[in-house]
Image 1 (tube, one colour):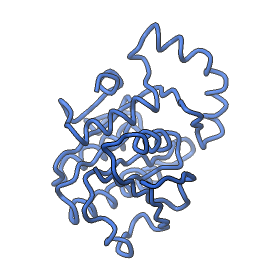
Image 2 (image 1 turned 90 degrees about the vertical axis):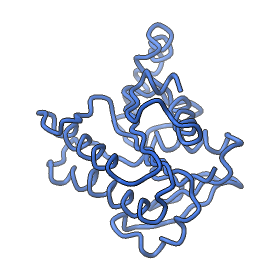
Image 3 (image 1 turned 135 degrees about the vertical axis):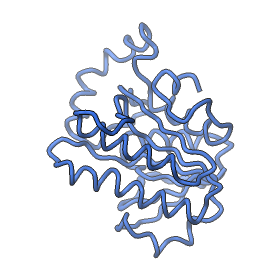
Image 4 (image 1 turned 180 degrees about the vertical axis):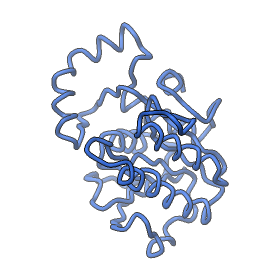
Length: 219
C-alpha cells in the first residue's frame, strides 16, 4: 500500500509515520510538507511544498496512491473564526479536492477531534469548523472517507508535540496517562493505536465513517 501523508512533523503525524514505516503492508510513504519529516527510511520520500492551496507543481506525484492520511491541523487558540476556517476547512479541502480529482480510487483519512459538531450549528467555533470540514470531505468521490476523532492522545516511542504548551502538559500529565489508560481504556488512545487504526481502515475498511476514541482503539 502506498500512503500520502500530510502533517508528518506534528505529534500525530509522527506517530502515524512511525507505524507506517514499521508495517510491512505499507510499501511506500510520500510525506508532503513545508519542512522535511525528519526521518530517513527506504520506504519514505519527502516532498517539500510551500503552497498548500495550490498543488499544480507536484500533481504528478499524486498518482498510484492507495490512501491519504491527513494529520495536519492547527489549534484554534488566538485565531478568529475566519482565520481558523481558512487553515482548517479551506486548506484541507484544497488537498482533498485535488486528490479526489486525480485519484478517486484512494481512501482519505482525516484526523479531526473529539467533540466535533456535525450539525455545524453549535456554539463552539472550532467544533463547527471541524464539522463543516468533515461533512465536505464525506461528499467527495473517494473510495472511502474516514474521520478520526481522538480525544486525549498519549505519545509513545519518543514522539513529542511541536507545540510548547502541549509539551508542558504532556510532561506534567505523562505519569498519569498510563494509569488512566489501564483504568479506563477508552478515555484516551495512543499515537501507536491511532497510526495502526488508520492503516487498518485504509487496508480493510472500518465499520463506519466517524471513528471516536473507542472505535480507534478497537480497530
